[in-house]
Amino acid sequence: MNFLRHIMNYFSDAQQSVKDETLEGTMERFFSLPVEDIMIPRSDIQAVSYRLPFSEITSTFLKTGFRWLPVYRETLDNISGVISIHSVLALKEACSQDVRWYRHLNHASFAPASMTIHEMMEVLYKHHGVALFIVDEHGGIQGMVTKGHILKEFSSMHLSLSSEEEVSVISRNPWVLRGRMSLEDFEEELQIFTLFSTEEKDRISTLGGWLCYILGRVPLKGEVIQHASGFSFEIQRADPRKIYEVCILNYPNQGNRELASTQNFQEV
Image (cartoon, rainbow, N blue to C red; front, side, top):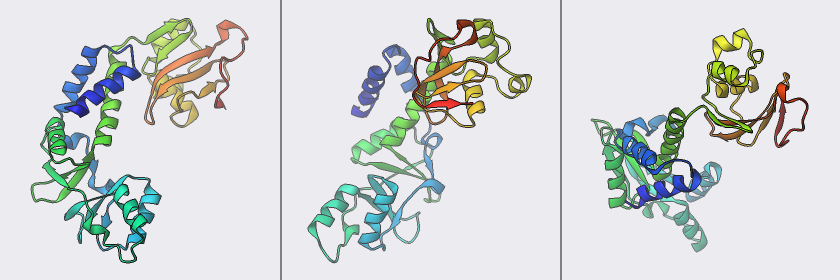
């Protein structure tokens, strides 16, 4: 399947250190999951009624930034199809005053929640669909899955599993650590036992969690965090939900040296 090969190429290019067999194992595990484990829930689906005027459809695309939108009749349980931004632009170019945009919908595919992700991908490719709508036993819409959403969920799962399988210390010169490294292991590795307070140790267990805690949010990739203790951390790999790799740019035992980077400097 072309999409599976695309995933393999994407992650092989992005992470040279990840072994192919590990990636293939993650793929096998991921694609055997039921589709309901990764679907976008009904409450989060942004769809439009076929009764809306063309001007509101174009406005919705501008507001959401989506490339396509589900279209329904009366209720979300009656999906007619999917309208793409390409169709909207083509219709707009035609400059028609009475645009019957709902006649230009792409095919909508449906599947039960028990279907595996692999089976779902076969349905999407068979019908050349962009989205698959998940239905319950009564035929109501339970959720939705897209190709882009699948790639995002697989990415999150792969990074998480890779972090679990790999050692906590990536490098010691300079120090590059996994975000899931425990605070106790951090202290033992660096022989510094005064960085974390007792309260922080009671509430947090990992280095990545501690950095999120002191910032009050998940930091961005490339962001540099300077702590009052003299530590400076650079976030080397992260997504919107968690930190995967952290580089220590400066710490007390090194003495006073210049920060290796000042991008997105943050004082805590």
